[in-house]
Length: 232
Image 1 (cartoon, rainbow, N blue to C red):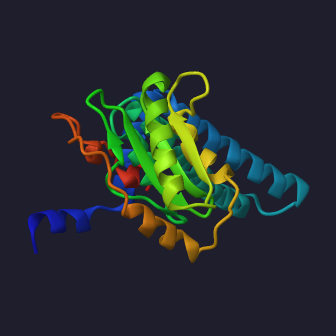
Image 2 (cartoon, helix red, strand yellow; image 1 turned 45 degrees about the horizontal axis):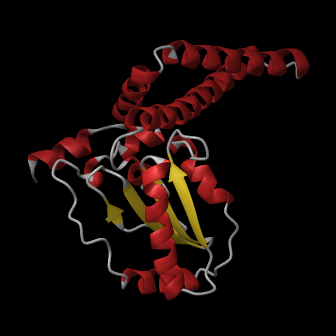
């Protein structure tokens, strides 16, 4: 057994929680007070309901409140660590791929982008039941022509399949990185589960941009720790 494998097996859930806390604290220094406050409020509410409203044993309701408080605190940390990671990677090449990697099912997400420029503008292509979605990283003035080109190329290959474009960024009309997943979920489903891999396979035959990824740009490495993002 290798040293790295042994190290991974020794990690416990609380190690992942500690990692998630450290990542979150870099963006939200007040996270400790938020966790303590949410846990204390949860215990207080549970005990009040159990003892005052239901006239139960306060010891049992306190124990129940502690378990509920732990659940609430972990859920809050899980929510905050995602937002923290998104803020920390926002604006870096490959940030969109880091968000897409958190989608567990429903979309086919290639490992490589379909278009990369020397200015670090990137276009990703994903396929799901909503159709084909091209997602860009970079200023609107530069990525808009790229998105239009990729959209036309796709529509020539897959007629009658919806093709969407999403610009990720901070400019007007662009979607913030933290809201990318919710934007994808809001798209109307129009393909069957069986049609999705067929569409993806046809698009894979398209020739991607011949420009090599510029030196110093590696979108594949701009990924946060998945366990930390899940708060586990």
